[in-house]
Structures are given as C-alpha cells and as structure tokens.
Image (cartoon, rainbow, N blue to C red; front, side, top):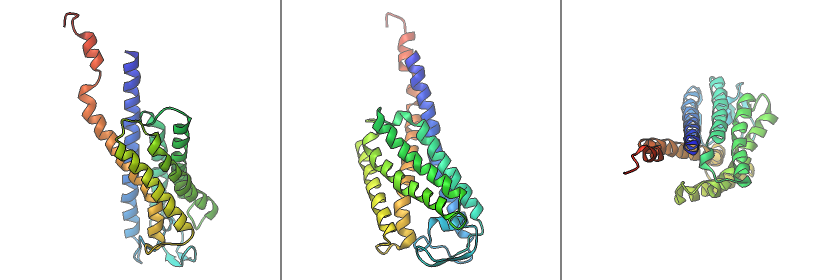
Length: 238
C-alpha cells in the first residue's frame, strides 16, 4: 500500500510537471505571435532577435546586426518569458519519475532548470534596459540549458522510448552547434534571428513533446492503476 501511494503521488506530481511544460511552451508561442503582430514594421524571424520583442524602447539596435526595434506589446512578451521560465523550472522539479537515479541526473536537471532561470532573467531585464543581466539569461538558456538537453538523452528512464532519448541528445547537439554559430555570427543563410531560434527552440520543442507524451501516457494508464489493490481485495480462492 505504501509503495503504491508513493508511486501514485509521484505520478500526480509528474502530471503537474508535464502540464507546466506544455502550458509554458504553448503560451510562449501564442504571446510571441501576438507581440510580433503588433509591430508597425514587420517583425522577421530571420533578422530579429527573440529578445527584440521584449525591448522597452523604440530605437536602432546596432548589435549583433543593425535593425530598428519597436515592440509596443513588450510587457506581454517579458511576462511570457517569466512565465515560461517559471513553468520550465516547475516541470523539472516535479518530473522525478522521468529520470534515472543518481547524481548525473541531478546535474542534468539543474542544467535544464538553468534555462528556466535564464528565461526569467531575460523577462525581468529587457536587453535595452539591463543588457548584462539579459545576456546572462541568454547564456543560461542556450548554454547550460542546451548542455542539459544533450545530457538528458542518457539520463531519461528506460520507460522513455529509445528513439526519443536519441532525438533528445541530437537536439542538444544541434542547439549547442547553433549557439556557437550564433555567437560567431555565422548564420548559414538563416539570418541572425533564424540561427538564434535553432539554438533556443529545440529545448522548448523537447519540453512540449515530452510533456505531451507524459500527459497522454498518464491518461491511457489511468484505468489500470492500483492492480495490486485489486489482487489484494480478491478472495483467497481466486
């Protein structure tokens, strides 16, 4: 009974964690679309940074590439950054059943949580208000977060299908490579904003897929919960 209750409690927490990941990513892209649509000058996924949406002032931004930034709904974008970061951290904290035991898994989860903290820092400090804090947030997202994503492929439990674990590591490699190219200003035809998205979005795609899978799996397993209780309650002769 005690083991069953502990397992059931872990599944409830994991369900909340998966929901946090899905909600965080979905609200981020919804707000992203809303904020970019408010620009008088068309916003470009190729030539504008993600953080341009959160800039508090209208001005010509010279680095890393010259562009004019004016985001009327910047407050909504910064609130979305903070919400996303918070929900990522909540998901990492509550999805203990998703991970193998051991210190390596703890380090991996801390690195992934670092990305959540990075989003919070970025939302609290728009790039044109506190550049240093905003850059620190970006480094946590695309640096430590992507290292965590790379390591996560080997730290997920065997309940996670092998292809998904391998794709997880591949996403980490892709994102880290893109981050290096972004820092060195080698955009490979994708533009500054395009390469930044290749560095930042794999983690969000992973959280959405793993969160959705976790929720769907929890629902399909609900009818079969507590089989040991049914056995315990059955007459001894059966």
